[in-house]
Image (cartoon, rainbow, N blue to C red; front, side, top):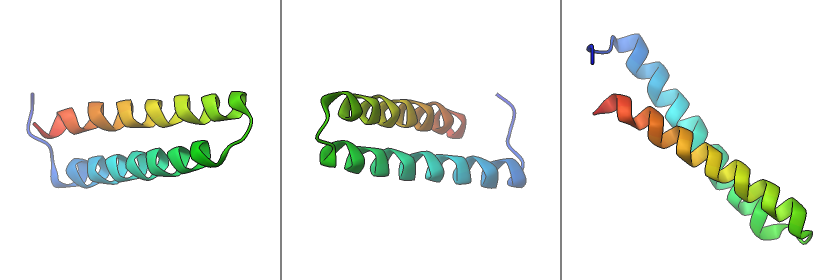
Length: 61
């Protein structure tokens, strides 16, 4: 894999941080949801954010 430029690295860190924030918020929303369908939607969205974060972190290795 090619070396990342400083700008690409900053953008990658920003995206990773955004997905982590989304993951945390969606987990909180899920824990507060009463409706099982809404809880499931938030859980799925949180998992998607976590998966994307992990993929993006792969570029740092």
